[in-house]
Length: 483
Image 1 (cartoon, one colour):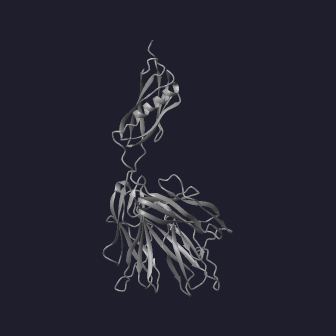
Image 2 (spheres, helix red, strand yellow; image 1 turned 180 degrees about the vertical axis):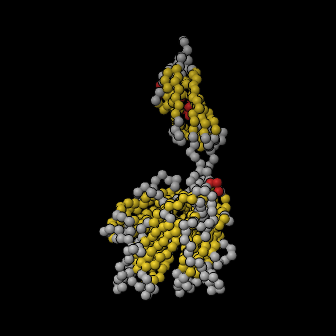
Image 3 (cartoon, one colour; image 1 turned 30 degrees about the horizontal axis):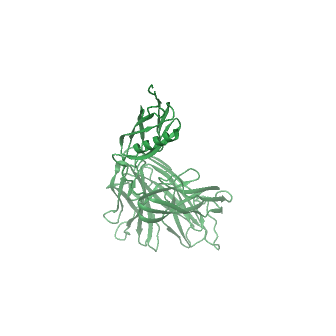
């Protein structure tokens, strides 16, 4: 009899609880499915002189329509810059990172897809530094070996390493590159702490000339940022890290920093080479997503000159029509076409939604800036549903005149912060009466049902199994009518 009563109560409650809601939750937008494979370090194990550089790569496969946001996560707790790419259909993207190490280390790096709760497979690496760290700078020349294979070495300094004041501003990196014999041509890259490798550049060392040359890289900065840069050379010793920190305060100023030295002016007249500027890359370009933290942009400009004598080119970045302070970059004499890249870094907030333009100009070049237009679309990412159990009540009736199976009617009022599916369960005296799952619209809703308990008193409990998992209980007592 009790077993039949419990089954009857369950069926009755089920019938009451599965009635269609007044408004169902809106269908969710199709998500982008992402998988990360081929995560590796190159070289994964190395021993030798330090500083040295380790590269990392992974293949990100995406299917769907939307934006994939990712970053590199490191075993030491640090994280790279958040990057993104768009996908519409199927797309595979090889993502890369590069880190310079000045001491023996063992660690790993992995790719984190934002919105996913787990990391990719880890790329483990080991660096064993042989002997003390070797620094080859102006005060420590690289030994000459005229008859041996070419060896190159690099060192980097930054001025100022720390800055606090009005922005835009600039920090200047000075790289010292040496070679073991002449003549020589060295391929090198600037390596950035958050963006990885810059483009390949070349430095020529003619016969009879010095074995040491210096290159400069001004970094135009439009907002507070920090990090480090290093130089990676082929067939030799990479530089260590040159760390910097910029804290922007006060109002913007287009004037140069008072501590900045005045470089050699560019040649003038009809013989002066005409610079050609382009902006080959702007990352992340068009951006659509969350802007809880400012979205950081990195622009790469390219300044080119024909063959000619050594010269200095003055250039400046322009953001949304506002010119930044002028910077200068040196070009060595060459019989070949010459190219130097110049970076810019800035960030935008959710208060700057809309279309923006990044421009680049150089003195002596075109009278109009080269421009890249991009769109910042900050979206409010949907938050999880918050469910509140406003109240729970009961009433009692007696479908069985003997009172052997009283019916306890339960009423629960819920409030949802937004539309969503709620999974819930009833329990009476520790025994599950009914479990259900329903879609509700935002706002207040009511759930009613009946339970046939086996005891005339006890505890009825209503529990939401998902979202923020609220729970509420009520005591009941059945007073059977007198016979």
